[in-house]
Length: 189
Picture 1 (cartoon, rainbow, N blue to C red):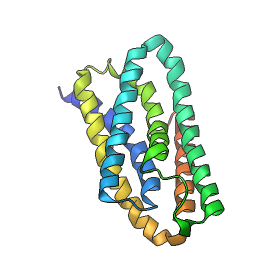
Picture 2: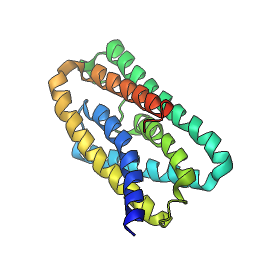
Picture 3: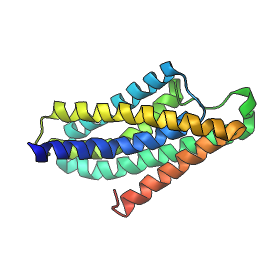
């Protein structure tokens, strides 16, 4: 029982780390409490949904797609970061324009970018020896908690960044995407 719980915790925490990192980037621009809840639920839903999709695709086809899917997610994260930087310079932070990662297409892209690596995890999640529902609940809870913590940290950091918050958020997302891609490539996480 302890070994199974440890496996679930490791999966949930490993998936929550990328959620935390992206949440810091999103939080830098500042978010309201309702937006925090919306983002937390969206990120958790995306993580759980991709794990379910991964589990459904199966082991053989899944392994090939899973490795590529993670890199697609990292690339999307880098793309969102680049877009935020470009928008910051094009429209100006003072106008409050640019890609809003707390709603609409911005939230969808952020959710998709963090959850694609979960596709690969989903391929093997049914083999960890714990009921799938228990594992998915743990993943959802860890995602929501790490989102709130990351958004709070990012919000504090964003106040310090001032008018450069959009630029800094973009850089954080780019570095996060590059860091996750490097960690996966070098089998560090």
